[in-house]
Image 1 (tube, rainbow, N blue to C red):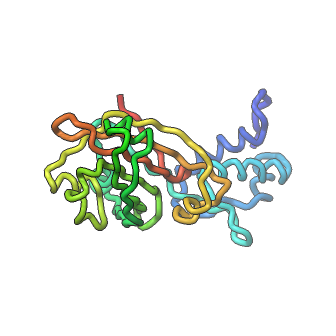
Image 2: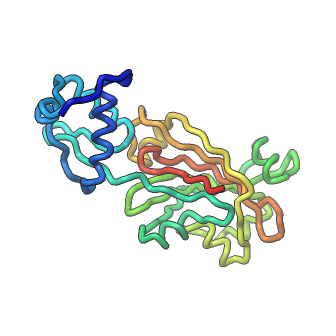
Length: 234
């Protein structure tokens, strides 16, 4: 197969071709080996290896020594709108979700928490840390931060969707805003998410208000960038 003579490097042309063909593969399938691909595209093995490395870095495949290049499941896409809730969306679309409670802490509020939750300078907060799973795979670590006045309301929370728990307690939350970024994970984050430390994570800071229009929760999430995408709906 001849590749076009254009400004884009040949290995990136191979990347584009293989991405289009991944639609015909199921998760877990193996791509042809480096030598068959090199013959097909009329390039050397090094060029093919470089293209496959790009696909691996972008989360489309995983290179397994002695086995080959295995196709990964397409990244999960979460539509971020005012009333969307993580577990509600994925459960409705056929994906099983879980949330494991990692820990609870009561502490002085940090500046960003005082600002977004409209707290006094010496206020305290209560923080719940959860590890979120989709289809039994760890996807996100989330810090849920609340004013200390809500401690009694939250006391019975043990697992599952925080939004669903609060809804059952009479607090219906809606998103005010979300700030999306990216960075490299800490050692603890990479361990919990089963992610290499050299792979980036998505960070999202979300402020939600209750039905009375009062700032209620500041959520700070860390998610696998290779398995999770945010779709911002306007």
